[in-house]
Each structure stands twice: as C-alpha cells, then as structure tokens.
Length: 234
Length: 297
Image: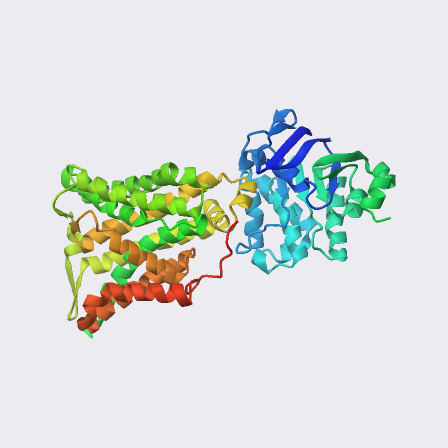
C-alpha cells in the first residue's frame, strides 16, 4: 500500500534521512525502530507532507504523495497520531474526535467510526465532554490514536504511542492496536519501545542515524544479535 | 437617574462597537501571533464603502450597508492573502512591519482617492438611528438602542459559529496548534481566510455603526478606535473571543462614565485608556479571561 524509496531529508545542514526505503503492505502492521534522533519521526513527517524530502519517492497505492500538503495526504487516506499526542487541550474529547474527521462528508461513516473508537477506548466515551487537557497521559494517547482513526484512514501512522506511558498503560494501548491488527488495518508504527512493537508487528525496519541497518519479519528481527543487543537489552 | 441610564446606554453603545472591532484583533493574534495594525483601517474603510454606495451610488441604506460588510470582509481576506500569507514562516517582526505598511496604505488610499480624499465626508445615517424615543422622562436616541442590539446579534452569531460549527472548531484548534490542525485534514490557509473574513466582517459592522454614532468620515478615523479596541482585547485576554467582547464593553462603559461623571478629566480620556493598557501589559498580560500562553515554536 505504502512505498517509500530512497528518501533523503535535510534539516538545515543535517542529513536526517539518508536513503530510506520501506514498504507497508495492505493489512499488515509494519514497525520502524530506532533510537532518539535516528530519523523515525522525520520519516513519518515526510509521508504526511510536513517536511519536503530532497530526494526519493513516496507513494500510496501507486499515487505519489510527494509535494502534497498535509490535508491532501489526509484526504488521500493517510492519518497520523503524532509524537507527543498533540491533542487540543481546550477542546472537548468529542470535539477532538470530530476534528479528526474534518475532511469527511459521510456523516453515517463518521458516526460509525465514532462508535468504533468508543468501543476501542471506552474511557473516551466516559470522558467525551471533558476538555482534552484534563485527561491523563494514557487517555491523551488513546485520544490521539482515536482522533487519527476518525479520519477513516487506509493507512494509520503511529508515532511513539508508548512514549511516557506507564507499563500498564502501554499494555492497554497495545491491546487496542492488536484489535486493529486483527481487523486487518494497515499500520506503520514508529517506536523506541522495540519489545512492544516487535510483539505486534509483522515486519520491522531498524534505523540508525538516518540509515536502515536491518529489516525483516519481526520473528527474525527478534532473534538478530543487533536488535537483541541494541534494542531489547539482552 | 435619567442621566445615569442615558450614560450607561452610551457606554454600552460604545462598548459594543469596541467589542466588534476587538474580535478581529484577538482572533488574528490567536492564530498568527500578529497584532494586525491594519484592522482599524479596515474598520474605517467600511464607513467609506457605505458613503460610496449610499451617498454616491444612491443604493438604499440597508443594501449599501450589507454590500459594505461583504466588500470589507473580502478586503480583510485579500490583505491576508497578499500581505501576510507569504510571510507565514518569516520572523514575527517582518509580519508586524508589513501590517503597519498595510495600515498606511489603506489610510493613504483614502487621502488620494478622488471621491474620498480632501475634506471630511458626511456619513449617510438612516432615520432609524437619529430618531428619538421617549420613555418616561428619559430621551433615548435610536443609535443607543439599535447599535447594541445589532452588535449583540452579531456577537451571538459569532459565538455560534466558533463553538457550534465545524469551521469554528478548526478556528479554535488552529489557535493552539497549526500543524496538528493540518494533520486533521483541514486546509489551514482556508481556515485562516475564514478567520480574516469573519474578523473583518465584524469590524465592518462596527465601522458602519460607528458612522451612525459619529457621522463624519475622515482617513484617520480608524486609528483611535482601533487602539482602544486593541486595548479591550488585551484587557479581556488576547486570543480569547469572549474576553474581547467583555473587554470591549468594560472599556466603553469606563470611558463614557469617567467623562460623564468626572468631566474635568475628559481631556485625559486616552491617557486613561492607555494607562489601563500599560497596567494590563505589566501586571496581567494574559488579561481577565486569558490563560498563560506558550511561545509557539
């Protein structure tokens, strides 16, 4: 579904992404692992049209995403739960969710997806009239994911959904991801938490300072020395 | 008693005019962190549009006024599109200087335009506004009834737009986080255009009603009301729409009541207003309803 080829991104003089290629097949969960500053978030920002790559190709089902503005990328079927959640603190939970569906005109579909995200994260239903800023960190993460799902995306991008969450909440959020996976959703998951990501995803890529250093089915990555030493701490 | 009521009505009238203008300052500041210096001049132009359409082209007053609102609102959108949008990523100071430039441009256009320049122009005021109503022993001029009523209707409409519609939701979202609003699938340029449209339309209503209250047109008539409305926006908490309304009414009332009951101080009217501005900027920069604002990166 998503094809990224030879992507180069510069920030000022820094070569943040040095020839990334990856693909996300329909119905699969793919993870992109790496330490801080490896270029994971940059990759997602390039896909969404938030940064302009110097070189390379990005396409969704054969249609190029290069040069598209973020709102156009969303309308083509890609949505993202950004790093740090970035929920709107002054808007209610429900308003946050409805903003996620901003580009949609199918009222019935929006209502169906609202029901779906409430079933996925029942706490959001309870707190739907509360201001986003009053939610706990874990609930804000759930809201960020639910808000991205409200766009009705073909491809869902998740940027560090476990960042700053207590282990019990990570389990809870990943249980919801597991359900999305079982439903056959296509997901590109960026994580520092390799253990959680590798237990969920079908396929993984490992980035180090802007370059791919390994990729393969997650069952193989879990066994590779590089991943075991650097990311699983074994 | 009658004088009190009369003066309070005058204060509410003036306050509702400040409130209409203050909305545009506060909405634009909330999104772009820009003090739109041209806003007071957009307000001034609305009065001139009524003059052009009603006095020169002989349109019926209400139709002329309605057209003036539409044209002025489009002026606001055009100013953003032409002067501010290309500088969206530029340092704030460039944007500020550009806004001052647009302000001078709008003022000087009036000075050089053949049908506008030269002497003061008489503003065409509809009879409804000059009519005198007598309630008991209180005589009330139409303008002190109709101006607050029309302003209140516009402000209620604005609250509905901002808090109950989809584009209003996007306007509130964009004021906290432009990038994430874009990730929601909203075309941010469009949302910003809507914001200028709404802010300028309200300033236009303000300008048209201002003319009914003070029926003389001159190139600089937007400057002082603009600064006072900006002060009102700061008092209410800049970026906060309800705050701008509150600040407008408070400032209008304060201004009229001080002049009415301490006539010896009436010469210090502007000094008094700007002392309030300085006081708030020094001791309560977030205003009455504002919250501490994070610097945008």
